[in-house]
Image (tube, each protein chain N blue to C red):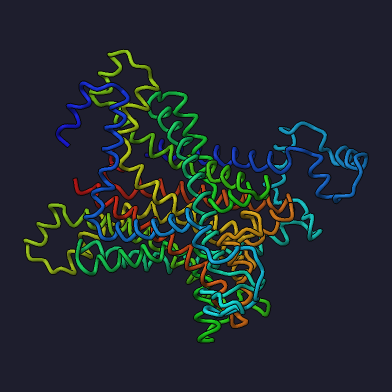
Amino acid sequence: MSDVPRMNAVSTPLSRLGASFMASLRPVLLLRESPVGMVGGAIILLFVILAIFAEFIAPFDPNATMVPFAFPGAEMEDGRVFLLGTDHLGRDILSRIIFGGQRVLFYATVATAAAYVVGILMGLAAGYFRGYLDELLSFVANVILSFPIMVLYVLIIAKVGASGINIIFAVVFASSPGIMRIVRGVTMDIATRDYIAAAQTRGEGPWYIMLMEILPNARGPLIVDFCLRMGYTTITIGALGFLGLGLPPPDPDWGGMITETRAFVSGGFPHMAILPACAVSLLVLGFNLLADGLREVSLRD
Amino acid sequence: MVQLIIRRIGMMILIMLVVALLLFLINEGDPRLIARSILGPYAQDQQLDAWVIENGYDRSVIVRYFEWLGRIFAGDLGESVIYKRPVSEIFWDRLGNTGILAGVTFVIMVAIALVLGVLAGMKEGSLQDRAISVFSIVTTSIPEYASAVFLVGVFVFWLGWLPGTSSMTSGFDPLQMILPVLVLTLYGFGYIARMTRASMAEVMTTPYIRTAVLKGLPYRHIILKHALRNALIAPFTVIMLQINWLLSGVVVTEFAFGYKGFGALLLEAALRRDIFVIEACGTAAVFVAVLTQTIGDLGYTYLNPRIRFK
């Protein structure tokens, strides 16, 4: 840690960006001190690997209809095994969970990252410029945050229709105000520091100061919040799928899988709905544990 | 203090008016879409135009907005496109059902969360603390639609103790309330519990608690009489904000169990474009949410003597 300021003093913006990137990895490296965080990280890593290599890992085509109502472990005539059984249309549940995870992780990451870009820009501007701009942005944030979040999602998706792009749009609309509030608070705090005054005296422009001086120093709470928000977004995408407002079928998505098959829980085929429910709970648990571990580690120093 | 209350209430009214305007613009901004949803997909353009003029929808949006506000204050919520009945006949009934569900959940959830949060926070780092913290993270990670499947699987089909529906078709049945309340409580209590734990842990490190311990006061007495009073101030705001979360959870839970509440009504209306029902439900949801946020803010100010006497 001691040589980071010295590097900053003589370096160009680009290598400073590199230094701040290395510094932002520190909590990740420190995570080995938090067993809870490591469990969370391992769960997420598992789902990420499954998502990236889905084509090679999944034993079947997720939309191929084969033997309906097969229990976990059932065998096909050619000897291939349905490890987690099949659903009411005869589609392999393991393959659907793997490809569903790919879809959920993709949309959750893109949506959360986009919400972060919007929220960070709004928060930096509000916290750094203050004045009318701050009043205006904060009021907009207050209005959006006053909606119960699921009510807001239902209203938006019902209006603009259910598709991947619209889900990303809805997540950005609903969660960037919360991100903006966090960034605004941290920005107002950091803006009073001496190194900001130094940068202003050097004649740096406001956006340079915000993005290069303030944002890297605000990363601590943002990394924890990002993990938590990934969990919420995963829940949201599942909830929209469950309500019938989610990603369009027939490609699998966990919430949709639950809603399609939960009627068969009563018919003696509980695995069809319980397995995707386990998958979504496990992934969200991973994000929450990782966030908890990161918070614990960042409080320590 | 009085100035703060007036400012806060003024803000609340302004936000409600803006949100109502947004809801109105989304639903009634384009008059031909309203005509389309009422006259059906096969109506011709001339019929749409005739309907728009006949019902005064050709006037400016702002005029219609204030008229609409006036009608809402008078209790006229319009007529449901699907049910062909005044919205108020369906709406208040549904809102009352949700009020029962949310009220029961709220009481149970807050009680459990406070007890567990205090138990965890009074001995920070102990086994008791770790166990409660991990338990609350796990329950917060299971979304309502997943825990509904798990609980129905166990209590309805495996053990056969509870009914799997909450539609109350043959009158009110407390047994049908158990699963929705359980699902909402499991998902929601963790956040309050964690906030309470953090607040309690902070209070336990303060000098006045150490003084009380050194004076030789009994441990129970220190926790109940000294620590709790200050430790429960911060969670109060969180608890009031939790009502906003509860309204979100209600949409999913009511759909999962077929409970006839306003969340299910909103979902159904949104899927079938029943605009006046959407407006009524959306307005009600935001009204409750903004009201509880304001109460939370003001209550926090009142409870915290450092702000109250400034």
